[in-house]
Image 1 (cartoon, rainbow, N blue to C red):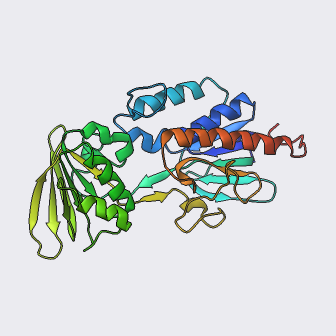
Image 2: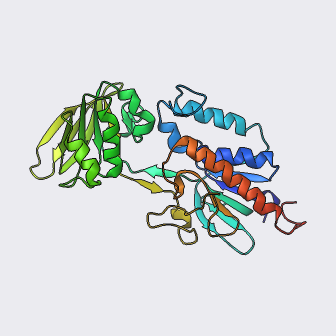
Image 3: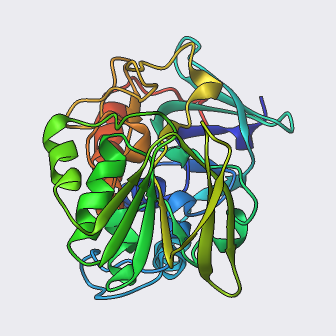
Length: 315
């Protein structure tokens, strides 16, 4: 193993959780590597963040730029690549990338986040950040006074719809099955609102616009008839997938694939911590991910200082 591939701490992911963990680790002078396919993750998709303390309004990309700017002030190794496998051999952790590079560490923080499930329809990627969003809490206020559509009839979809009902004159709820799948109390709220129109057994076929979203084509799955809805915002809530597939055989996961942690970011595996959206912590928000990253790094530091000294490690 090349010396440069040995670290005291390996952080997988460079979103708010991973970068905050990196800053805290660097301040504790831990030899740290951050491995990620990109910087920022889902936060980059938010066209406006209005709930992060210190900024009344900032784009997700600009906020991530601030995170990265601070991180680069410290002596942290950044590696860009996709993790192919994550293993837990005796005495440490090993991540192997798709290009064959391999890194080992004595402690690790999993901060790989979640990926929004996309609709996979024409126009979706084109209008991300231009009317298409995957976070009502982050971007919902941008659509105040406008007509919006929420795609998804589960709890997350109806939660988004309830948020938008308060600020939008018209809210469409588009659900692919023949009934809403949320808790009854939430279903009652949307059915009792005159500004909400619910489309069941409906499939989104296309998103249209010019510089920004203008409409969405929806097909009735039973009759095959199509309808074009004039909307200025589309909130996609068809689920999130934790980015844990590369280590699913060894990571302590819950039933939906999230890494299970305690209040200090510890997992059931000694030396393995996790932070941010990839974890079992509720409420996936930038500020929560950042706070969890700080806790995980401090936990990793406490773990490392209690390990026996290995004079050959990372020398």
